[in-house]
Image 1 (cartoon, rainbow, N blue to C red):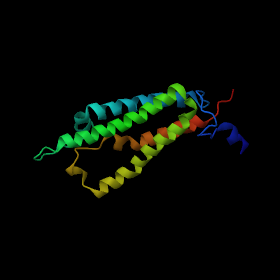
Image 2: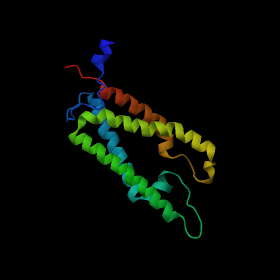
Image 3: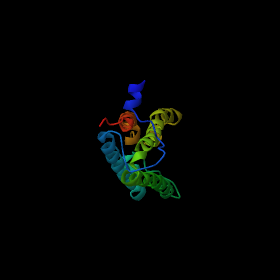
Image 4: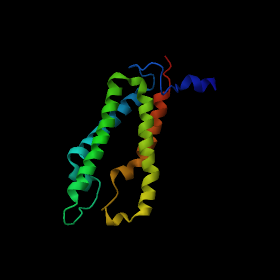
Length: 162
């Protein structure tokens, strides 16, 4: 048990929040790369919602009178805004409060973990062929991203032996 205590630092909410990160450098740079990718994804969803919805997420263009797509694009854009706010919080952690990186990993694990378990149930509840032309990258990659985040989280709580 003492070996595990020496290897891992489980203080997700440290008593004092600092810019010191005691985990693996792989976890730190993995977090930076992941947040950069998520920021790019958020910008696409927010500002290029039509392309993000049809070109990337593979949703069909809906027909109707009045045209329902502008409303759908606004909701998609709001989702991008929410993602961008979370990414902004992560960038603040990266630059000022690195001791909170393990906690931020847990938030990302929660999001991507829900995707792993939600998407298969979603496909059973509606016929995806009515709405999409294929899987979204978020659905297809969710299991891999989830595992990667778990590994990086474990590396982020591993105490460097100096």
